[in-house]
Image (cartoon, rainbow, N blue to C red; front, side, top):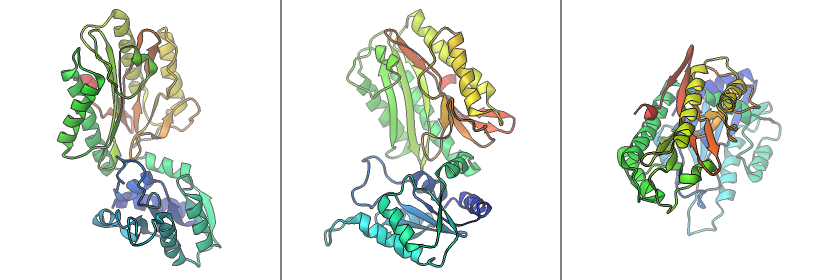
Length: 373
């Protein structure tokens, strides 16, 4: 259990005059409990949906399948489980999950106040089940408010993020040491994945952009059978999950000696990244940080990159705050954000450099170290 986050949520609910909360986002569940559902194979056909969290007062109950229940209980979580995989009855996992939710909420049937609701990840069936079980309640959509609450990391969360980022640094170092002409993008991916999982001691969910040559101008993509050639640029953006928390980093490397034009792309991206890091401090609005870095790219003579300048990192690999033009949220101490400006030129290539920083009371601390290797 992540008791500090549960206490923060309970305090927030009291401030909103909410009597409870029904939480459906798997990212919020990890934030509260430390449990991270397996994701290697995508949606599980043997569950009715992502596990739900019901918070009433200071108590937390998780509605989850019997396959997930043991891992949750091992973390000290109270679980109301339902049967998932079975051969004795129809595979109606969604129906059994709805019945379990109805039973849990039925125990608070006299509740008539406001209930915070994460509705974006909640199916229509489960929403109707909740409304039927608590007909007198007022449901308060709270997805955005809860994502902002998750944006401020605790000391325990920061420890987990640092461990995930250590895998990022390891992966970048592996690529730097093993990059050579003649291998394919997939060859490189296979070797770095093995290195990361051996270091972690088990399977690690991960995603990545790993592209080379002119593909770098396309911003990203999955590794292919393209053969690396001397002089190629290689754009490698790596995002692993460890113990429920994500890391993120990106670097642009070269196979042998690049042209001066390609060197310039990487140099500009790196310089703009450093200026962004220097500007991070509490009170700076996300949109102002975004505008400053895009202008730096323009001043260097390139078109601004078409993606975000940065984003929060935590139980999701892309979360609040988003460093984008429309986000007016000011940075706050305790946030963990990735900054990743890029420069892309069709017909030539592209470069992106990314570090993750922890916002401190008077600036920030850089948590990734791959660019200093």
